[in-house]
Length: 230
Image 1 (spheres, rainbow, N blue to C red):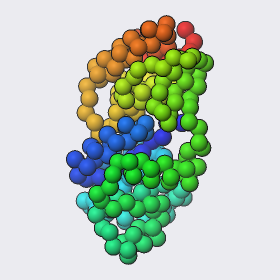
Image 2: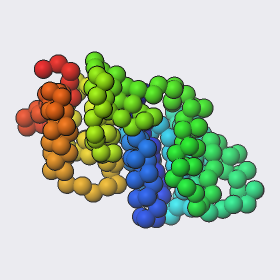
Image 3: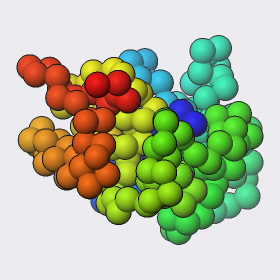
Image 4: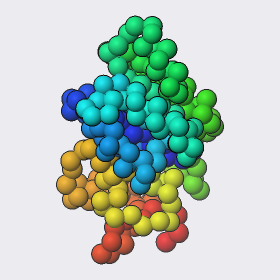
């Protein structure tokens, strides 16, 4: 299973932060934008697998941006879930007619949101049903949120799980601290780069108990690499 990236386009800080947290806990890799202009720049540089899009945005509305996006061949198949306080049937119909893949009326539960995201991703072919990532004797169980070496389960936090998910889906590549912050925490979350070092040390300490702390390698002057090769 590849790392699934979700772009959250929401102008209210509290709601945007809540959505980022929910997505991270569900094992996704979120990025965020406050308006359509910022979102357009993000998808140009780093195309997501799905967009959570607020209907009402400053400047270009979410529904208008979605309509324009769906007219561009390169983005026509990009899944979009509209988020809005509008509950009238005609609004739902309008949202779906412009090409949105689903529609959620606020307020909604995190559990329902994640279920809707998985449903849309399955329909779009982004999720192919693979529940585990296996590298040698290391297994990351996506559904159960478990990290396993051989027949032993490792105790990892949600952040450490996301970090391992990213590493195991991008092995043998070197990433800077900034890149890891963007991919694991998301661009909208302010965290100092040294936080990466703290989590790397914790992850290595967990792996060290099983003699596998060498899996996360420091590339001096650049960042970190995950590799099954010494």
